[in-house]
Amino acid sequence: MPPSPAASRPLRILVADDNPVNLRVATRVLRDMGHSGVLVTDGEKALKALDAQSFDVALMDVTMPVLDGLSTVAVIRERERAGRKKMPVIMVTAFDLPSDRARMLAAGADGYLAKPLERQALEAELAKVLR
Image 1: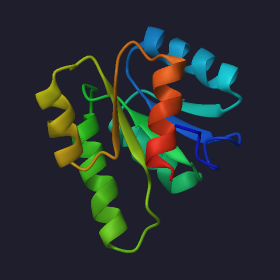
Image 2 (image 1 turned 120 degrees about the vertical axis):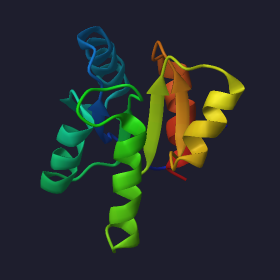
Image 3 (image 1 turned 90 degrees about the vertical axis):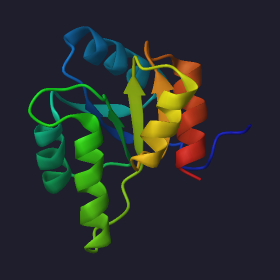
């Protein structure tokens, strides 16, 4: 599948994950792809970043302190129903069963990636959610 026009340009990506190793991996993958990332360590900080800055897409871990990823997506979707611009969200998680993917999408995520984050999988998922 060819990349979408949005995925072929440098993207500004919000990355929410409480694990420092996962944040380093995400930074490296995004940099190698020509994208930039803003890193936060929980859902509450993700929501604050979304209030303060503009992003093309968010990569969201499921299990985080303060506010987990699924709860954060719920708040993002509620804000959209109140008139905010649509924010594509890709869940990035160690939960890797088909039922997990279905659960993430049913909770409001636009996409799903299993950890560890890999460039090829991220490129494909970005192309899907940014059409």
